[in-house]
Amino acid sequence: EADIYQTPRYLVIGTGKKITLECSQTMGHDKMYWYQQDPGMELHLIHYSYGVNSTEKGDLSSESTVSRIRTEHFPLTLESARPSHTSQYLCASSLTGTNEKLFFGSGTQLSVL
Amino acid sequence: RKEVEQDPGPFNVPEGATVAFNCTYSNSASQSFFWYRQDCRKEPKLLMSVYSSGNEDGRFTAQLNRASQYISLLIRDSKLSDSATYLCVVHNYGQNFVFGPGTRLSVLP
Image (cartoon, rainbow over all chains, first blue to last red; front, top):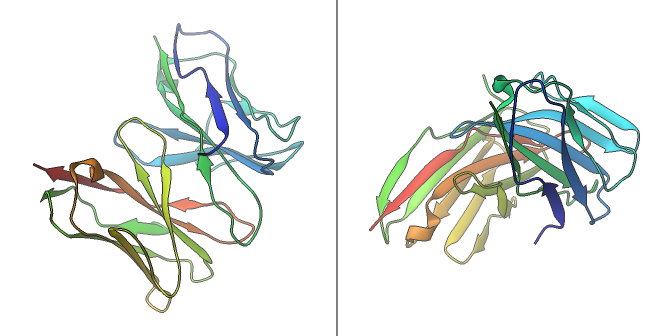
């Protein structure tokens, strides 16, 4: 089992609220990622980090921001949530190497009313 | 054209059937290949890596053809619990993982 944790599992919140989705991993992985996925649709990479103090935007434009102050922690923040942000957010991590594999957390299902 | 493409699906098969999924990738420099399984509203989970010589894990067999840039997954003796979306994933060292759109499998009683 992968040791990568996301909280909360489900979040229902009103428009305009600031939210932070938490993601932590205890595997010492240097790389961490955030994906967004709507039901029945493809995964889209929205942010990634190759190490502490390194963050990059992914393939899909997102109004969210991320930070990587500690290796194990990669939170995602939405300053002002909107209904269009309703989606599943999946955090993942990997360890750089020739046998690199990607492991996912259980996801946060966000609903913005 | 997408970097990783898969059979569009869905595949609806009876229990006990053998089913094969195909995947093609466009980046010839890709080095690592995987099949992930994703259940409805759950996270993707690594099913198996795919090696050049082909590899087997129980009822699952994965094959890679680097010359044709083609990956396959064969599931023998399908079980109801095999119903899921199967994601083909490609990785190049130093770059991000690239996911295919997935192929949905429904195994029917």
